[in-house]
Length: 165
Image 1 (tube, rainbow, N blue to C red):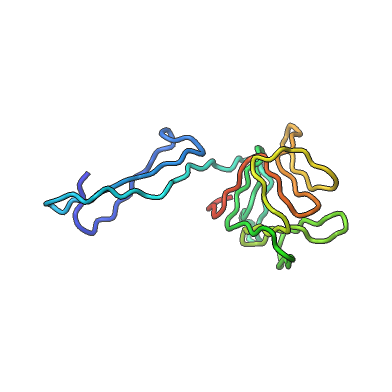
Image 2: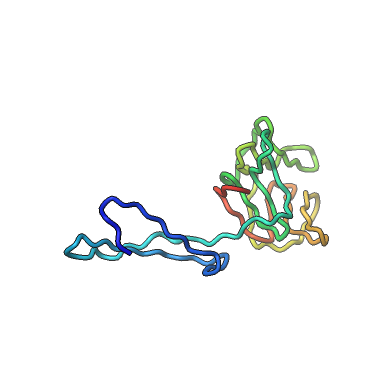
């Protein structure tokens, strides 16, 4: 294609040409009428999965999903994960996860961030021990759990800054 100076364009990489978890690099070079520039590549573009309609969803006070964990154990956050927090101070309208002594070990805030005393483990073995908050799909399979120490184990992966969790 040919574009004149200062023309902004976009191209759509259709879903039929991609598979989730693929990484793509897009390249371009410009032509000034005389010479072509060197090729410049984008950073990796990760092809993400869409959240399933079957999910555990955390909503804000407006009723919008800000976080979810789907039926295969993928987590989608509107914002970010904050791991290994020394202490937790959940704000109003947070979804709080507590341990067996009622101490806060993790929470989702109303903006869609997850704060944990522990860490998030992706593609984790689903072998909980002790006290846990377990998330199971419709067939009863364990897909994620928060343990008593504030760790989140996901059968799948996590996505941050996701527009529509």
